[in-house]
Length: 329
Ligand SMILES: [Zn+2]
Image (cartoon, rainbow, N blue to C red; front, side, top):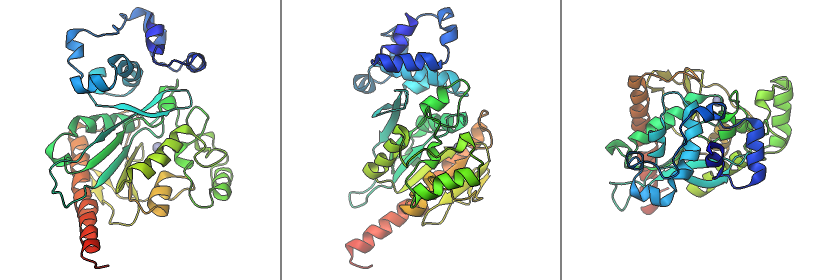
């Protein structure tokens, strides 16, 4: 019954077989000791999801995604995940799990302005659990006044197969490091060479056989084209620093995290977005992969990030637009 509930959302038998074989759904081992999740939910549980959201995504679909994810993530409970406003992006992981996202429309800016567009990516490396959990916390704050002027596209778990593997893995289900799979110039020559020479064929850093060979990186590549972000925020762990690639002034400090460039790699998102496409990429390296920052530190990082976006991305975008409108180059 529980198995049927979990898998009712994954309608292809081959995907179900693959997930079962991989032991991918956490909690299955203890599933028989749990109460059977209701397919329609109790009145209290139903109230957790807004009517508009419930209409957009069936609650059973949300539950089948949120339940295994929140069993793994530190401090993130099921209800906040159900309330997070996530919808299927349309893309699925190698094992057929939906890549969920939430797009938030900007509010409170004048008609003449164009809002800064912010793309937030958590969990590109599946074993950096805090990198997804932090994004869930930010989703709780996304309707607050200081976040409203911006257009957001938020993806808490880009690599669900890696997150839900036992144990969680940095790479996706094909063994590819998604953060080395983006089409940086000369990828075919540089990425395999870097992997062999610099990492000694480290399986955690395999860049794949071709750029954007993976459904997860391919979706993000297409999403960057569609969403046209003015800034990309990519969350990692556990180095406890900030990294930055791109054309504007970097943030020197977000919370306790200090800017300390960690290098440019063939196929990385920072290299692709920041160096090649000219979109600023802020890489937040949290200090621990399993333990969340304190509540005060989480808020501090969030607030500092919004201040930096306002002064270095939003104001610059407005100034650039004004220059174009007035004909000054
Ligand atoms: Zn990482």
